[in-house]
Structure formats: C-alpha cells, structure tokens
Image (cartoon, rainbow, N blue to C red):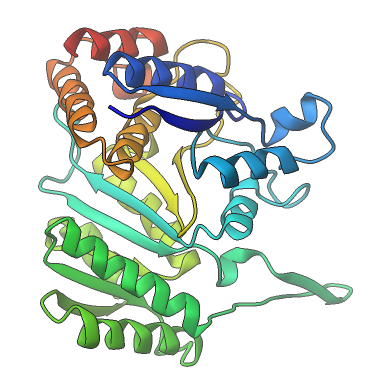
Length: 335
C-alpha cells in the first residue's frame, strides 16, 4: 500500500473520541497513513484561534487533498456560519455523497434499503445567503447555475456507472420553482441523454418522492437533488436504517475531498466514552475507496458487518453497552 497523508479534523464534542477510534481501525486494517491534525469549529476558538475555520486548516486540506473530519458544532439561529458550509464552498466540494443501506443486526421497519443520495453542495437555499432588507423582513436567496447543476448531474450519473447502479432519480420542486429547479432538471436531462443513456432516468416532485421513500425505500437507487433537499432527504433516509450513527458521508470536489461523520457533536455525552464511532469508520471506508485502497476498505466493511451481526459489542445507541473504544476493539479483533 502507498503511504497517504490525510488531514485529520477531530471536531467538537464527541469528535475527538470517534476520530481516535477510527484512526485505530484504519491503521489496524493496514492503511499506511501520516495524519496531519488540524482544528475547526468550536475547538479552534477554544484553542485561541480567531476563526472557526483557520486558514492553516484550509491550506492543509488544499495541499494534501484529503481529510477525515469529526462532527463540528454549528450554532442554531445565531453565531458563526456553519464550518461545513464554509469548507464545501471554499474548497469547491460540490458533491455530497451519502450511501444508505441496511446493516446486519440493526433491526428497522424497512428491509432491502440500498440507496445513495447525491446532493449539490454549493448553491441553493442551504448556502445561507440571507439579508434583512428592512426590520422584521428577511430574504433568503436560492442560487442555481448551469455550471453547478450540470456538474452534479454528471457526477451522479458517473457514480451510478462506476458503482453498477441502474437508476438515477431527481427529486425536485420544478412545478413551483420553475426557473431554479427547472434548470436543475434541464441539466440532468441533458447529461443523461448526451453522456449516460444506459442509466435509467426518473423524476419525482420531492413531496411525492418522500412519501414513496417511507412507503418502500427499496425501490430507489441513486437520488440526485439540490442542496437543501439533499440535506433533508439524506437525514430522512438515515432514519430508515437506524439513524445518523450508522451512515457515512463525503464531500467531494475536483481538487479535494472530505470524509465525515454526518451526525452532530453531541456535547451532552462528550468525554463519557459511549459515542458510536461507526459512522466515521464507515466514512473512513469511503475514503479508502476514494484512494483506491479497495482491499483494505473491504476488510474493514466485512469486520464491522460481522461485529454488528454478532450483536455482542454494540454501543448504547444501538441497544448495547459497549464503549467507543470497545466497539473499535471488536472491529480490530475481527480484522
């Protein structure tokens, strides 16, 4: 295996605990890695830095092109702008990719779930362009460009092709947002017709799409959507298979990629050693696949699937009593 340099952003709250456990699993599986630890989020402020996203952190990710990131705190309704949004915009990480599948031993209301949400990551309402135009009146700007819409459509169809997926379905609201979501649809249709005619293409108005998701998620394959819709639907889909603690996440651009736990920083349980590190470990597997270290990625995936199926070393959120480090130890033992 080639040696990889990876920027490690431990994050806030439970972040350092789950990143430490993930590092142990990756190294035990045989990943040859040099970690470059950088701060972001509330932890950066606590360390005396004047910004939640220090320039040195951005520079490190730009230089090394790959990062593994724990959860960071984002204030609700006030305070600093989301670190995640800043990272995506400043580094051009235009594709958020979140695979969602049923896991062995994790019982949910649904079976046969195996889908992937591909979300445009830089535009739309979620980008947070807001202004108070007069006291008591606020506007939010939804931006859609042909460049970004075409880019994410091409990524989704290329991903489906690489992963031997059969169908790409766009969730939209073009019946109301005829220009912005209409442009998104136009770009997806054109990319499908011109470049990927072998992939089946479908469209669903998002409210109907969400209804069908909770009726039978097994009917879906790759879901493509704009930024805000993707944020909402990806969390909804996580709930179909056990929650945010059992799904990975990645943010990918042409020059860099960040792999992250998609759950929050959970300050209420920070330092207690009970957080579930699985989401970040799964994100580490995505990172290995991105680095073309597929054999090591498959070893880890098989190991955590086996631990989950055994059911003897589950963390508290999954109904067990195992600690964060205990869960990592169980995976390492299977390796």
